[in-house]
Length: 470
Image (cartoon, rainbow, N blue to C red; front, side, top):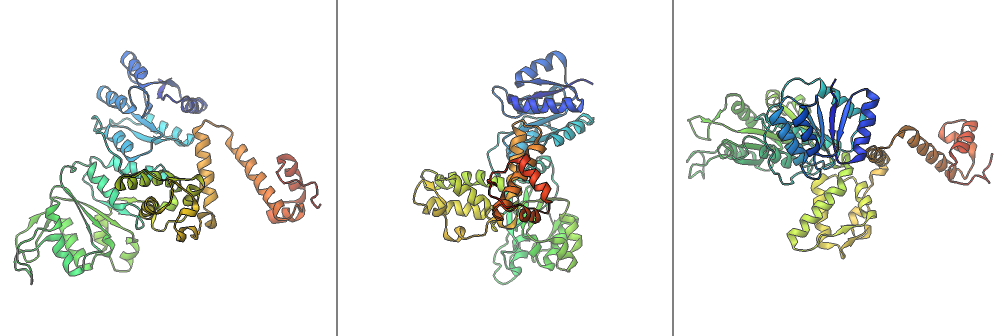
């Protein structure tokens, strides 16, 4: 088998991939720049697969992707990047990438992806130069990367999408991104919150009305379906829609036509529907509150947006972005959070999700006394808020972040290293809790007296046990 190509200016990333591929018996060849790989492409032809970083000095990975797909469209390309944003994901997929791999990555996942890439024989479509995009959604957490991938894969589609997620998690932002990166991007994007409009007015809002259709209808009015003609209609909080309107919406989705209120002429509905809800629609279907046939019409592609508590690693990134945004709006310098304040925010639950965090950053910009923001400068209700560590989630998140960091730095033998740290910490804290009494500490930990004695000698935990009781 011909070697696959690795293109990355980061020596540590190349080292990790080279060691992993050697272990797996997959031949490879490494390049430090896209131009170096391009020269080899011209003289030797394409490899069976290619992994390229997205941002490198000189030619970018996206430029290389475009050239490879123009000259060798059947060559699968995996784009790697430490800049895990929506624009990179969309640009990669629009450029014809086979997959998008955010750094730091799990090496086993990378190997699985490479093997799947090597088995790929079907050509990818849509090889054209990616558009220059501006930031719109931020997120480096794996759950957000899945959202970015989905938006990228849907970028050439008119498919109906159902977005689920808690209030404040950014459902409308994702809907706008789906529209912006779709074939309908030059047509209108019309959003309507179906829960915010009185039930007796919602039908007219959606479908419009004829003059004289009801008291007060003095002129003809185009509804949101007509306003969104050729574009996208975003129906937010679709789970709160009345059953009567659910029936009318189902009819539109079924035959592609609708009538204005009081009208008799059918109007063609050339719109893409994106719906969103914070509710569990399957449960509402079982309760008879939502039509099952409408649910299946809407649930063609489902995107789940994670709550902020499931993507805590994104909080520092979001805080910096929102502080910068608020400073620009108010014409001042952006505030800076101390490390302690940032760690404190990263531990909070944020029941209002990203919207609550954005509002907090605006509050900090206006109300915090200095440029450096400490925990004491935060709103009183947040200083008294329950922390994530009280739910037992904090240490798992911190562990996951540390593993990602070590993998990204090319570390090896992580199991033994981290297991040693874990055991040392566990025994040290148990001994501190019991005042150095080993038998009691062993009982608490559920291990034998001989075991804890041996572990203390092997691990040499911090607390001095010279005065500890037997």
